[in-house]
Amino acid sequence: MPLSALVPVAVSVLALAAPPAHPPAAGLVLSLTDAGGRVSTVRLECHPDGGDHPDPAGACATLTTVDGDFDRIRDAGAVCPMIYSPVTARAGGHWRGRPVVYARTYDNKCAAGARSGGVFQF
Image (cartoon, rainbow, N blue to C red; front, top):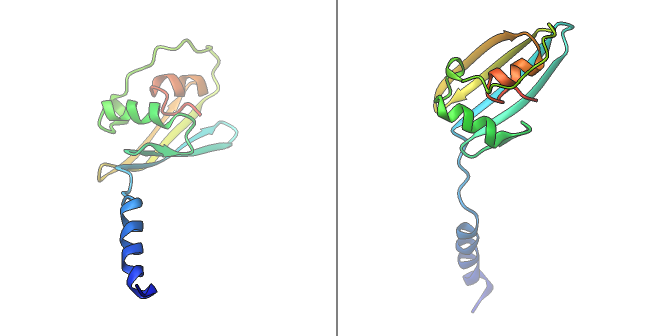
């Protein structure tokens, strides 16, 4: 069998081995800005979960329960120190085809993580 006859077979086998890449159903950039202007930023992708968020599975699970509506996230109930050191949490991107623009100021970084169900815990 000539080598040229094997090329279509090899291409077919490779196509079966690599599943098609699907873009995530949600892609968000999350940031925390402290009173001194320092910014921490992470990427979060959901369905499939990924990005450089420290807990993408947990953050995506939280957002999935509220269909990406940050205002509906329930407080995780963590006990945070009563130290006023405000941080502004921001989210931008898309959730299942809908644009996401969110901003809220929390009393401190711990409160941002707890009140967002872990989404802003980074």
